[in-house]
Image (cartoon, rainbow, N blue to C red; front, side, top):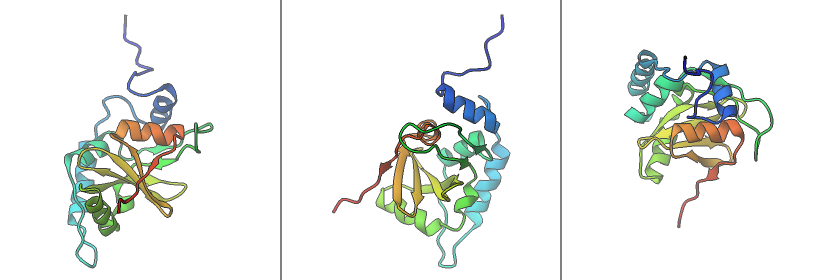
Length: 165
């Protein structure tokens, strides 16, 4: 008897369905594309000389989810689900912004992709935590890529980042 390959226990059914519709499958790993993105980010400097941090947590997230256009259907649990494009080049010109937020959080940040409807930038830190940056502020999406995708795809409200005085 063959194992059932149509479901996984890693993600909830709606998240798993949205990811599979976008082209993700368990074991997906495009390290060549991830390395191209890493080189592109490393080679880019802003006019003022700001550079991107690139680290294993980002490369691993790109290898597994990079290039996916995720378009969840249905209503969200707390807010509307987010349409996503996992492509770090959405943040190519935001090295200073990511560097500043990384310093405020005492970590390094690297672009992950974008919420395509709102143009919010998705970023990942060296520990694998995921954030989104938009015109309303900076938001924490989860301690790892799996929980961040679940937050975005199911429409859970993210946690706003605040600075302590």
